[in-house]
Length: 238
Image 1 (cartoon, one colour):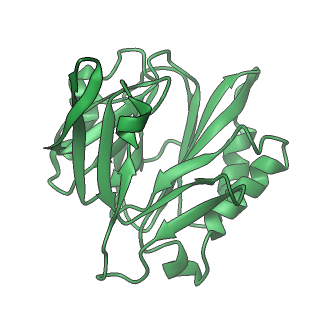
Image 2 (tube, rainbow, N blue to C red):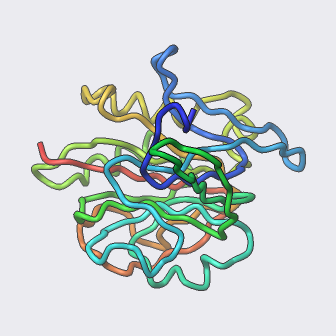
Image 3 (cartoon, helix red, strand yellow):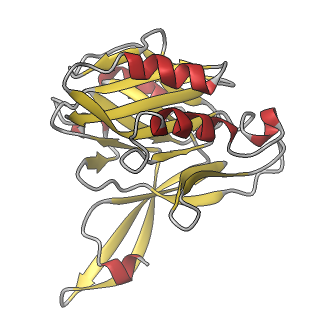
């Protein structure tokens, strides 16, 4: 697929515990996750992000970035440098790779995978983004965050990073939290412009106490949570 698309943007992959994303055939957000603890088999996720910047060195995060999505392995490398990063949302995964594509005569040739301890994705323009961590009702969490959207801004995408003990393992049914979030967005007429992305994590990366929006590159305290869902809302000008 990468060869056919001739992608020139950075591409990162992770083997994780489940993924969350939009299915165009079903026209809805779905959760694909591994049921039961201890029987994980993993799935692969592409980690590149159009219209943004990505990397695997914390020192390369743009100075004006107000928030950053982080996917980190279990080596705890990220925990040693996370204080250098702005507001974070993401999770702990199994393995991360950077995909290197060698080009020959303008065509993609050999593809190599370089294992990295973490990767990040950020918007270099200082977008206003909201982040929150919750353990209770997803509908209440998204409604609370939507109420805090700054004047003149509107949602343009939602990130969701639940613990892998949540989802079908907690509710006994699939798509419970993602459906609640999508319903809240749809009620505001934002369905097609607000597709949900994310993954199930073995440790969720998010703010320690902060909940709300910021467009400043503040080094807000963040930590690794447990049995939690991290929610993020990206915005654009009305």
